[in-house]
Image (tube, rainbow, N blue to C red):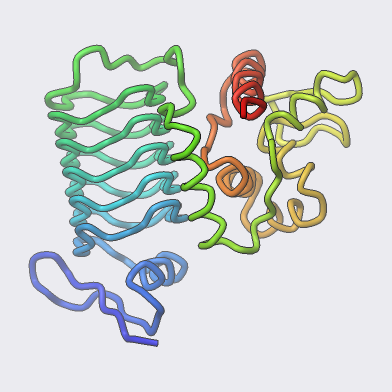
Length: 274
């Protein structure tokens, strides 16, 4: 393995280093070690689908980085440079993006619920279908016209083609070989909650053996492997991992029961189409 070094964007000082297979793996190690990555130079880094929850990346340079589907809930990205970054479907719930540069960033379908975007620069950013309920947009600059801080008509994610989803699922499976895969996942959840034997309740991960939320059902249907993943990563991230490996998409896990069921029906219908 090679020694990778994460350097400060301005001073060039090494702020974290380790032996790893790639820079991506080095970043994972840094986040796991709770390293202070403030000001890190990570422009154009491939961090798609990465678990960076709670990462401290204030002032980091992530311009052009691939963060599609990344889990950044609670991360500190205040004053970070995310210009042109791909954050499609990323989970940024509760993240600190105050004064961040998001010019031209692709945030379609991102979960920004409760995120701090105060003073952020959003010129040219794509926020189509982004979930902004409770987000702080005070003094945010160049907010795209039509941006609403409420549950949008299609809050789950952008609608990529089935081929794109299949490619993303394939890539995710290759990167995460231990994540269980459930073919036609939404169809199986729909069958479970409409045959009279099971119930969908978005108010809790698991209520009982036959009542779960959307992520909870994904975990439950994956059996022992699903519950082992939940024990290691928590309910939210485990459900998301199973969905990404199975379908190439990450749905909105905090929708109402009615809206979640509506989306499950739509996805099940798409999965049934050859």
